[in-house]
Length: 252
Image (tube, rainbow, N blue to C red; front, side, top):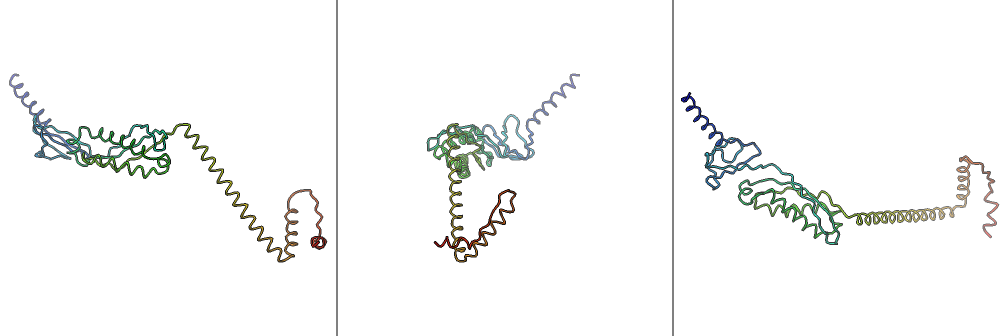
């Protein structure tokens, strides 16, 4: 029994050591190996993906996910350039393009990217007016993406997109904008109605000029009006008066 235990114990130790020295990385993972505290590339399998063999108790491996990360930027309270308080939140899409820099150059690249995105969001929107924030969202998004990407580039991070998701305005500002929009709609309605009256008067003036050139046209128009009135269901009785009877009075 003692001999069996003497054989089993070393086998278990060997299996544990081998289990700690053999690592398998997925396709979307990369490894940074530190050998006695120094970053080492002399590792079988290098940094993945696939099988990586480490030296037990000497090598230490750190995994890095190279997939695109979607990160929500917490709601930020800002004051625009025209002194309007706004609550804004955003979303950032980024990924690790250089795993070595992401681990060595910064302590926590996800937290650091989040902090940079928050400060950049406050800074850029604080320099913009409310109308720009509401109507030029794409331009602001491009500016945010460019600034955040420049700051995170030394960390091996590529920021692909920054999108402002929502801008929450105070209730008083929402009511003021609603009144402004209503007034604008009323202004457009009045302008359209006035333009319609103008066009109608122009057409009537042209029609009068054409009828004045041929007096018979007035009689034809008179008869056409009688036909239109007679077609409607009403009890009104009309007594047509020939145009010739009133021509003499019209001349006087």
